[in-house]
Length: 273
Image (cartoon, rainbow, N blue to C red):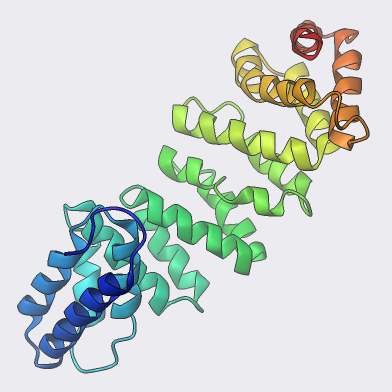
């Protein structure tokens, strides 16, 4: 029996291969129900690696039978592991067709979160320009889960395209959903560490034209950044992030905007602690 969590060993892979062989035989003989039951039996697991390996192997099927139709139905199964396995099947079946994958992910972002995030991160590596276009649309979605996921993996382009990421964040700046706000903070921290000058320039503008709610959201990111500088003060004073953060905090303390000066003073306290 395959363990419920953790990475797989050789015996685990043998069990998966044995099950997949049975699935292929049944599907080739048009025994759809039997093949489906074998898939769901193994896919109903908490083990992420089992779901991925099973989905990957199902994607290699080239015989007669309707594997695609079977997995399409399993995408709507009430059990998470089964939906996740079906998503991995479509991922490995369409690994060279990102447009198809994005259409599928648009449906699974709310129902298969972890695996959808994994695939989105891989797409940022392989098709960054396409992802820029698609995630810009996701940021406008009525679904808060899709809006939050639109920021996932974006730190991969923060170094080369910081202003793109910051403009994307601006679309979600006043979003009231907690998941969106949490993802916003994490992404802003990542951008600021890579490109502090770009990040602080935009944050300054957001503060000047924002309200207390916006300031509270930005504080969640800025206090982390200030704490990083405070911890590393003695060991890395030549770092751009360190230097720019301290200079920005000093400038903000003297700013005519009450929200900006208040933020500067609060950050200064962290730097002095």
